[in-house]
Amino acid sequence: MKRLVLLGATGSIGVQTVDVVLQHPDQFEIIALSAGRNIAKLQEILADIHPKQVCVMKESDAAALHETYPEIDFVCGDEGLNILAKRDDYDVLVNALVGFTGFMPTLCAIQTNHDVALANKETLVVGGELIYKALHEHGRKLYPIDSEHSAIFQCLQGNRRSDLKRLIITASGGSFRTKTREELKDVTVEQALAHPNWSMGAKITIDSADMMNKGFEVMEAHWLFDVDYDDIDVLMHRESVIHSMVEFRDHSVIAQLGAPDMRLPIQYALTCPDRFELHQDAPLDLAEIGTLHFEKPDLRRFPLLGLAYQAGRTGGSMPAVMNAANEAANLAFRQGKIPFLKIEDIVISAVYRCPFKEVKDVNDLIEANGWGTKYAEKVINGEI
Image (cartoon, rainbow, N blue to C red; front, side, top):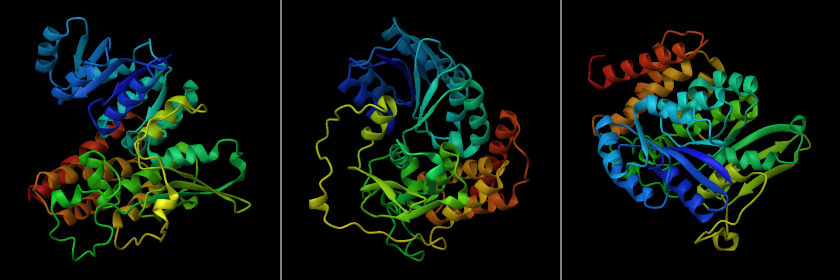
């Protein structure tokens, strides 16, 4: 029985993690979870899952829920997330949070000697260097949940890292992959959220539409697999059948294929190297798909992808500023405050205007995150 703490239980990845746990009740137990503001979804989950401790966003929600579930210890806010991460009675932290808020719980879990199954991109985008050091200092493991990184992780099994030549991360191209930049000027939030292949949360779906998400994945791959940015390529692949590939020095390329179902990488992160049965309504059928397409990404069409390479290579405070500005701009677009292409303008200008600083500790990250957020908000509000 593997005991889990699940952060972000009511989001897309969190809900699918609960489904994996319910499929294998003899293998997994969720002893604590977080739910943010979606109390209705949390109550649905609590009908099937019986954790000891739950974190919600608001103190008032925690108090109200305690009246209904007196057997559960309720905590709240960012400090509540850290309390869950620091528990001493679990094996793996599943971090399915969205945004910079996911960084500290990841670090807390590692520092209290827990392994982490990671779906929170920002943990490594913003603080990859600090997480990398903590993993080695405490001898813990980081298991990738993103489909692309899970694919790479699976392709590397049984192979020597010294034989690795490059990583090839595939990209669907998102909701607007066939649109020109001229056609993007007036796209709506609803159009951006209509991803052709995957069912994901709103923030990550928008990030997929402008390829910021793929840039984040390049940065994640750098830290997860200790591979230089020059050896990480992105390949457009509209069908999302090949989730990523690894090329070795003899030019052999190994790919991981599967239906676009996030339960597969979630489950493998929790069971590797074992593989459990996964109940799928539509497993991969290559004969039905017939043809797979590939092309190089156009960095003029998707400038945020190129920016991510630049920020990753530069390091320091730049990745944190980029991420913070993107979080603010992404939200502003979803709220109808700015047009779609303004996201790129805000993120690019934030990166080029930010004061560079080495990141030595968490406080440096918090400072860089604050700078990027404030800068983006000023642009959104017309103050810059």
